[in-house]
Each structure stands twice: as C-alpha cells, then as structure tokens.
Length: 312
Image (tube, rainbow, N blue to C red):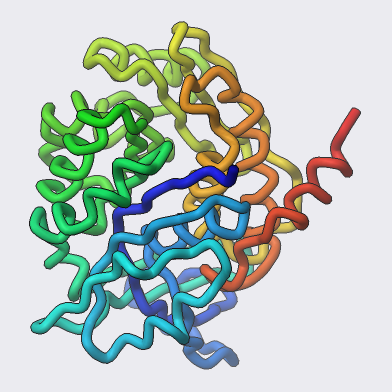
C-alpha cells in the first residue's frame, strides 16, 4: 500500500533569471538570459518530490484566484483537493537569481495567498492529516497554522516534520511549535539562526543537535549542501550521510527534494533514517543537475538509477 503524506505549505510562481555570477553591491551585470516563469514554493516543491517518489501526497496550500490548479499542479499521486483559493490575494511569487558560475541561488519571496493559509483551512482538511504517515511543513505559511496542523497530527499519532525555512532572522521559533515537532530539518544557516551556534565542524554540528535534544527534539537532520547531511537519531547517535557527487547547475529546490523524497522512504518508527536520508540525497543530486524548481525534481526510477550506480 503506498505511503500517504501531507504537505502543509507554500505555492509560489517562480521568476528565474540566470546571471554569469552574483553582482556586488552597486554593480550592474548583463545577462543573455530572459526571466523564466516556473512553478515553485517550498511546500509545492516538497509535495511534488514526495508524489514523484510514489507517495500519495495531500497538498494543503493556498493560491490566488488566477492560479490554474489543473495546469500547474498536475502529476500522479499529487492530491490537489486540499488546495484553497484566496478571495483577496494573488498566488505567492518568488524572484530567483541563479549564478551560472556556482549554481547557487538568491531568492526573494512575496507571500501573497500563502500568508492567508489559516487554522480554519487546516481544520477543513483534518481527514487528510489523520490518514497520513507524515505531515511536513515549512515557514513560508503562518506559524500558527503549522502549530494547529501539528497538534492534530500529534493527537492522531502522525509524525511531524518541520523544515524551518526561511528562518526568521531574529526571534527564533515558538517553543510550542518545537514541542510538537518530531523531526526538525534545517540547513546549516537556518540551524545557526535558531541555535546561535555556527556550524563549522563536527563538534559544532553535535552542539546544534544537543540544543535540539534539550528541547525535546529527538530526531535532527541538518543539510550541509555538497557535504551531505548531519543527523541525530532518536537514540542520540550522530553521523553524516554524504551527498552524491554531481555537477550543480541550479540548487533551487535541492533541500525541498531531499525532504519530500526522504519521507517517502522513512518508516514511522524512524528506524531506517540513514536509508531514507540516502534516498533523499540521491533525489537531491538529480535536482541540482537540472535547471528550475519543480521541473527539476526526479521521479522514483531516476533516483533508483543514481542509487544503483553508487552501490558498492
């Protein structure tokens, strides 16, 4: 029976432009690339990643009245019946600059309808949450809405996964949200903003893990880009799962792919965390090798090819 997951989060229309390199302050660069419009948003990216890796995926998100769900959220396994239409705002927008030099990106977000995803919207989709193995959320939609979704999940034994991105520059996260989170999965900068401990070596990674453990979070994943991902499992064991080497064309949606793919392989008991992270890393390696956000996310067969090519 296919795994069922719920993704609570954002949908954005991405406006992407490639530049030779990132400009410095006050500098003007020319580019031969026109702005390309693509589908994105951390929530939708994670939903697409989960669906393409075989999980039945409920997508709880909010879009503007101009948004074409049938056209822009098509795909097997992706359930769009939970999508809410705003009566007031346009769909969220993301303005993305991609460096051809490194493949890195800089992203600016206009929240739009994402900011309106409400507690009431979550209550309308209780059945989707309660039948899921995992509920995954990010921070591109209101935190109060995520807290309510995680409360429902916790009451029904559904595992909660928080990708705290983008992290607020100040103020951290509510203790209530952390208390309702089973797995937290920031990148290294987001973890620094939350813990105040900059990641520079293995000791600082473990210090970050200790911060979370002291707040009741038993499973921690910190993504480290090309270095892979650090984890602390429910038994307190820490280690690094390496990344799969590939030529990075565009890192947009890499972290989202990792998380969305990971939960499709993770057991609710969390006893196969390394295996699931390895699958997520393989999926992410495909994503960064191709341009764009949603369009770059691989299907299950493509991930299997990567895994088989790296078997000992």
